[in-house]
Length: 90
Image (cartoon, rainbow, N blue to C red; front, side, top):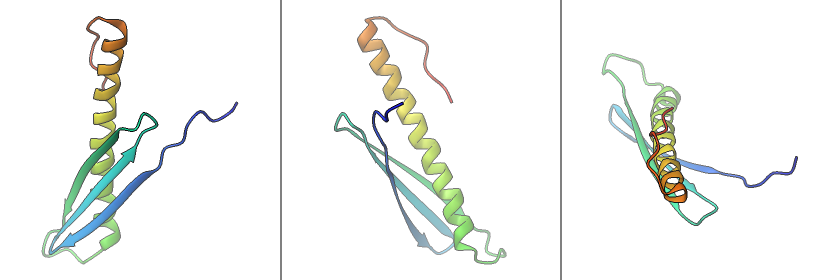
């Protein structure tokens, strides 16, 4: 089966004290972009493990991205069908 399209999500992380921030960007074939954010906070008594903060912040950004994609698809289904459908959920 041939591949129709491929997606690549760009993730960028920043560290600010005990907080790790993740920014996700997905460019779709229709030319639109979907951006999302996530964060993780480390308790001051926890040891520094940047990888863990990145994983949590990244996962939260990807969950936000998934929700936005579901909303976008829902709107496109309604527009194409001309009727109101049930919202899509994860």
